[in-house]
Length: 459
Ligand SMILES: Cc1cc2nc3c(=O)[nH]c(=O)nc-3n(C[C@H](O)[C@H](O)[C@H](O)COP(=O)(O)OP(=O)(O)OC[C@H]3O[C@@H](n4cnc5c(N)ncnc54)[C@H](O)[C@@H]3O)c2cc1C
Image (cartoon, rainbow, N blue to C red; front, side, top):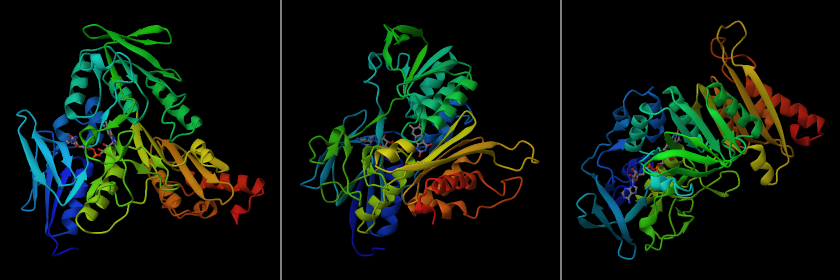
């Protein structure tokens, strides 16, 4: 706790990163004065809830909004955007959205948490038709527009099968549309899931009535006044609307003259989340991050990662000392009634990093046979065959995939050996779980394979 040092901290962006940076700064330094600049005209909202508001399980988009309270030491400028940073004089220029009125602010520490925006331009023809049949999902406004369009539509094409693409495909199917999803890679979520696990997601989509094309790219989005089709494999698919969900670009355009170092648009930081300019920090979707296991730089957009980085940057900006340890990419998505979760390396990434691996996969009911209606989960572990250390976990199932992956995430972080992992004490009670858990079974399969391969790792 810092008691006597007064700090003037400015935070750009009131999303996950801005909010947690602000919380950490105010806890770290009782004399910190915090100013948050946000271009929206309303307070916070939860982007992660958007697919569920489109689908209807969240009844109203307004339910996703909430207030981040101000205090004597915290002020917010809503409807204002940062347009320029003068790091030499420790000041920045903000502009009021709508009026264009300019104002200058000084800072002792600056935290950039401006997030990212969906990429559209790589798909030929899409940008021109944005808002006229082409949709993105990132804000309450554009998600509400998609929902309204969906109500009057029969057919939708989703381009991209990352978490947002998958979740929106199922959401639009729930609304009764004929849905086609097209993804360049052979299976979805390739950085997290091995192809055999990815195929389970494809099967799920098909079982929900979604038409899937994996391993193929959209050539063009077509239409004059509005979208009428997409060109694909030399043919055209008629559609009423298109959702582009191929990834995001960091909101860092306003930094071009600032001297802040970026790579492919994302702000480069050290482990304190500080940029190349002292006193300027960056967190979340606008910043680079690195993988915990190998410290390799990766682009990842998760609220979980952003929150941790926000806590680190806020603490340091206020005069404290904290380091970010890197991400394992631990995530879960909810696709058509299945939890789809992963952490650490998948097989492909582990091998690319030079590991020889052994995997173990179990597909089991999560409760004893005599419990009616027990769901099934498939768990896959990726293990280093030399050391026996767990490197990654993937799980897909009707229930309990996320918590199993969360347990594995801790094991990976703590470099736990698969033998130790196989004897992990997990809570058991028939209506909840079974005595031998799918995690145990997957670990035991790896152990047997290690023994057969003559690895010394098992001891
Ligand atoms: C549909 C969807 C579903 C998701 N689901 C999940 C999930 O289930 N789990 C998960 O972990 N993550 C999920 N994410 C990702 C997660 O929401 C983001 O990683 C996280 O919100 C990033 O936080 P951030 O603070 O970096 O950016 P944001 O939360 O986007 O906040 C950035 C803020 O900066 C403002 N801003 C931008 N430029 C300026 C400027 N020049 N001046 C002032 N203000 C500016 C923006 O208006 C915005 O409010 C999802 C994202 C989406 C879009």
